Length: 352
Image 1 (cartoon, rainbow, N blue to C red):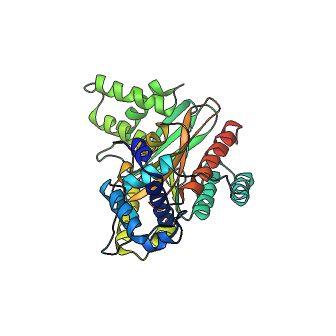
Image 2: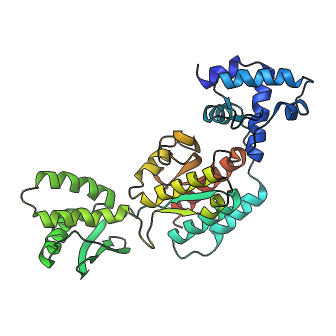
């Protein structure tokens, strides 16, 4: 039986017991016991009756017992049912709105700096860690060049048709020579002009397959390395910005701390962050991923509240989210993430 049908089949009493346990857990992180519920239920019922209801809910997979204690906490399935069918999303609080707006109104020199400030504000507001996926620069490319700096360091320079210039230092494949770098640059420039980075990447993959013999192996590895650097974290140009880690690392629970460390190790290793954008793109508006539903951070036992943001053409160009333990205050965080994503989209559409 799916969660929607399960919710419909539950009695009013079962639904109330379940809701109070989840809400209590989301506030305190602690198991909720039958004695606590006897004081808060809308009708007067005995602790024994409540314990029977709790056992039924546990049998259905909605509640679990973390220790030997009589208290219960929601399972991942229980949290999902609560979020989908019972959660009340609050209106955005005035102070939250003001904090987000003031971050965007300050004079930021560029979009990346502004998004970094938004990430810091989000982590402060939600007491979680914020994730902001910055947009790629999608203007057509005018010119690409590789510059050797040392045996193990090279610079890739991208000049866009709108005058924007990006350059990144990266480690070239072993054995590169000035001539293989020139060949790689010539190969890219022959098909780059008028194409955006993403359009060029798709074309390059097809071209390399078609011209594998013709294109020298060294030059081919240089082309692949030079393009790959745009998908990786750079210093000033990183696309996935994670702020507020300390909010999650302040937990005394050793097991929880290990899960959070796993999460950040996962983030550090993530070179291809397209998966994060995929999570957000699958549905317009805010999406909530709980625990192992979250294919990007499935080992962390955490939840992600994420929303894409769009440009003036209604094309998804980035995403913003909050990650934290599964007992996030979802009802408050959803409107914060939603409002932030809409404001970022508007600001980028208006030309920043």
